[in-house]
Image (cartoon, rainbow, N blue to C red; front, side, top):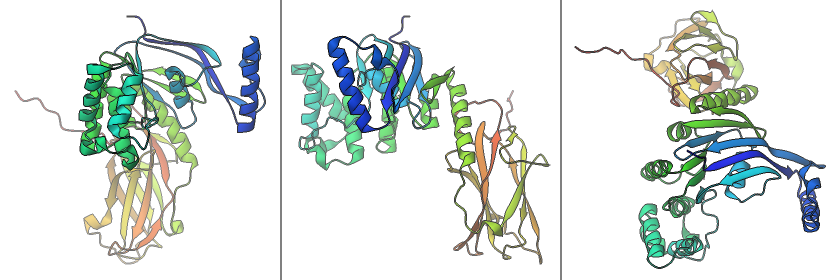
Length: 394
């Protein structure tokens, strides 16, 4: 099956300041008028390459997840493919109709109603008569805006605008579909509806999907590549692409110092299978984790809570001494806490300890984070991956 999208040796540069950008654009326009374009292909003062030698081939039915941290070049790449930006080098070959979900509410006229905006968008697509009416009705049904569909867009919430934009962009059936961070709109019901719609389109289209949500990427994509500073560092299975992305995210997280409160009140060490762990060290899935906490400065009877966080600093699990009715002995110095196995997906994590008053109202201390990593085979995007007792019944 031939590729619907073929990108060969794509390069795109930007200028770091507006003044230089305007100056260079004027010079390039003049050179283009005179038929001399070679000079504009090279970097000049204050310019940098946002994309460097990108090569991608995408066929019908493939969903490619584009991963990378902010500034990696993801949105620039998608805008070049969509024709919103002109590349400085390379070639992009597109076959068939292209649809894109980039800044979906862009182009809507605030003073016009949703129906009027959708009608104009449909006409720009070349629709008229029954075809246009069918398009407008399909958008209305999908967006679920009810009476607001005939109200001015300026009175819409941001979520309503996104829903209208998503519906207006996806009730068509493009051959190439580009999606950039747009599925987290509306309530849960509408998000599920968006997932179902994209799955439908993906059966007959080539899809590029950009998102910082690992769960969305793992759910939607069967292939992924990782961008860093405008270069493709990996192109292959989506599981491996996610693993590389999380490793890079872990490198960044370990350099950052989290919020602390009276960190000297509580110090702790982490042990893996009884061995002392060094910050940033990797442990394997299923390793027994234990904390050795110095409580000599902690008031007796306080609540001690252990937080497990992922690379985005979201709390995955916690363990609170209040659940165990912990009784403090006189002159307590150290507290051993077994927190079970590291039943976690491969990636970066961290542990921190919070001390609360006995009634759980006042915050007394929040320690610095202890970063570590879990190795092993990446199976899916769910961070907590518990073991179960699997037995066949005969």
